[in-house]
Length: 171
Image 1 (tube, one colour):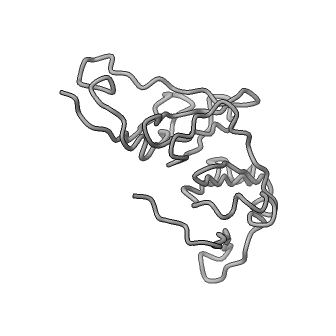
Image 2 (cartoon, one colour):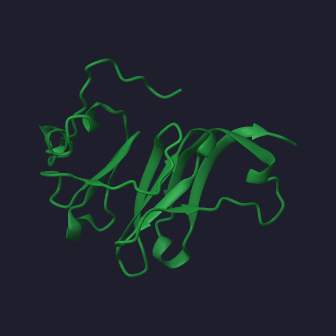
């Protein structure tokens, strides 16, 4: 089960620029709205092109926000078109072949899916299938949804994404 968020709990995101010896709070808590920071944070990722774009992305179980100024300010990303199920369970980011940032999220519960967001387009659900007949997703009933996902370090060249998807076998 996911960690339960205690009543009146507010999460902050801290940043260290000296290898973890000292920490300062970022602008995440105050910039993304009063209701978002009370949701569980499920992932935080820095852009693979950090040296050039200073982008950090944060996912809670109900939102995705990004900062392109190294965490000073954050903006929410619309989740239009995303079926949350029991919420966002994981998130990763990578670069496409043109060097543009791609966001990926997994959702939980019976509607567990992977969604990708590229450029100015909206979130697109990715079909999880079993082309080799190895007992893929058609042989399962979703009970947990997508537990984790990761883009390959060379996604821009090989388009490889891994996902851990939980369910009950019907075989």
